[in-house]
Length: 177
Length: 256
Image 1 (tube, rainbow over the protein chains, first blue to last red):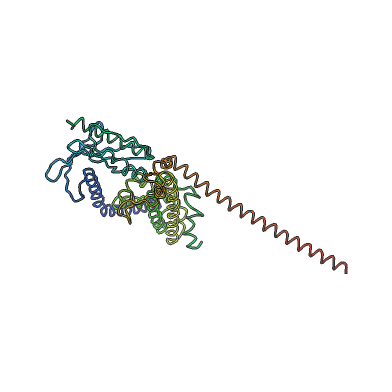
Image 2: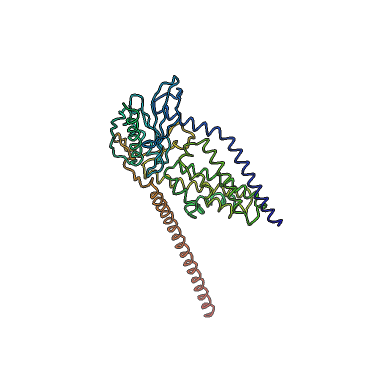
């Protein structure tokens, strides 16, 4: 009986100490984690519309979409003038997970596309960012022309193409003239 | 065992991945790039060292029957700490490692060292063992990462996932640098063996590396066996010579 009590006491003490340590680290890092996530998100939206890092933007509540992209957001400047629309899509390819943001301005032109999170190989992502994403910038959302280039990062590029075309199609259907 | 030998054994002689084939889940899953390999390795170094220290410190008070769940709780505590700190200070690495970061809890290397070493040795020796084994694990992950990333993309990048020492991503090495001396606009990534960045590539890469290590080991063993045989032959020769000399001197003595 005494042995069982001893075992229980040891496990309780270990569990309690673990809980205290985890709580302490959580308190110390929670604010930083939330701040990081918000900053990261806002930086991506500024990148999408080629805004300075100092410029202020206001975001609408995200609208979940049933077809095409996952989420639509409206980006305003500090005077509540619409800068553009952001379409966010999280998808998978053979290299791993990938989340892509597509920005379309009020004139219906694709302002930029950003790979916001991915587990794809960095060199592939870098190649797509530097060589292929630029081809979408300035294109009209109603007629996206796909640059059919030979690339070693074909799955990453394929995901970007799919997301950009579906975002453009959604924009044209719901917000285009 | 000296402290130096205790520290160094994890790199080659008892390397967790290349010799014991422990911790294969991260070795196959997160080694598509050097950075994720290095990041995962450093996190394992922290968890392994800290859990070894704590297990060695409290081993007297943990009843034998419940030692494994107790070790798991200790390891899980450090993994949770590492998870939160990584999310706070290396968000890109946290996103890239994904589910494999919390899965460090079930890395058999960590529980194995707690059970086989830390529970039987002093705190200092356990800390050295944890550090050495962790760095050996990191070394193995980085070797696989370099192999895979280079073959898949023709280069090695830094600064995408580990935001330390650089402001923006840099290319540490790329064949583009050499090839573009003679031409322009060449992208080696377009011609890389992309299978090496895919899950099957992890198995192929690990298989090739293990085959090279085994080949080198068999060569060394062969040389050692030849040297041993030569030594035995030499000893036999000397013994025979001595026998001959003894017989000759005996014959001489008999003749007199």
